[in-house]
Length: 61
Image (cartoon, rainbow, N blue to C red; front, side, top):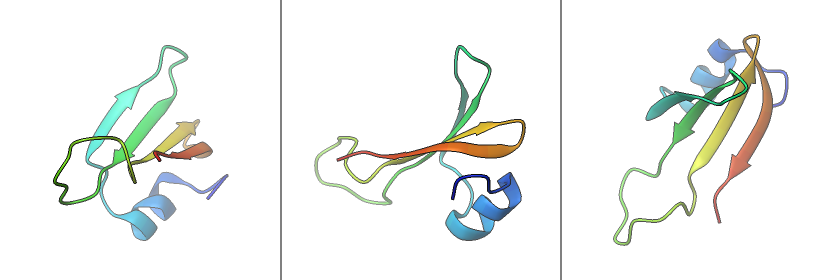
């Protein structure tokens, strides 16, 4: 997913659940699993963008 555009990420993962900004002015899209018994970050995907391109993808464990 590195270097994908925002449009390409939306086609692959859909609309993000949360959009936020880092202190470095990077945009982070957060994708959460649709249903969970215990709230935690497991299986949550974080996609970080700089200048409209993916620079980092992290998945919670």
